[in-house]
Image (cartoon, rainbow, N blue to C red):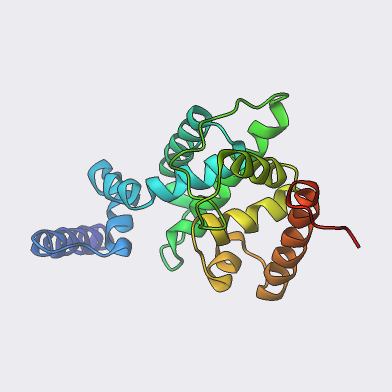
Length: 201
């Protein structure tokens, strides 16, 4: 009984602390602490923070608007269902990313054909204005990359993650990320060689 009263007291103090902070912006860690207690409103703020990033990363993987929307939403649902497993001492996005990454991988394994989407409005990795044919060739080149190479290209050039952020997100050493990115760019350049008029060595 004494232990239960102590736990109850801690719970009350925590709720008071949250309400004191209500007029301020809660930190991500505080929001996630509430989410682990089943607070859906707090989870809504987490979703709003990452939904755009999640959508565009999924889009880069599956190259289809509706699939990317469905997969990113499903990832948030699964993350909420499994939030008890999340370690509050660690950042949320790398943990969430692994859930979404697995969903995208499963989707690609099941999918035998991919629907094309309009490319207007999607950030070009080169960040330059190029014609539609060039964008289509670039997309095709990216989609031909092995998943791990496509992954670093998307995170680096679509979402402007730093090398360190990519390493933390995918859970790999920094050197591995730099190497993967080097070979991804090399392979992408080879895939686009005929269109760009680059002679293969």
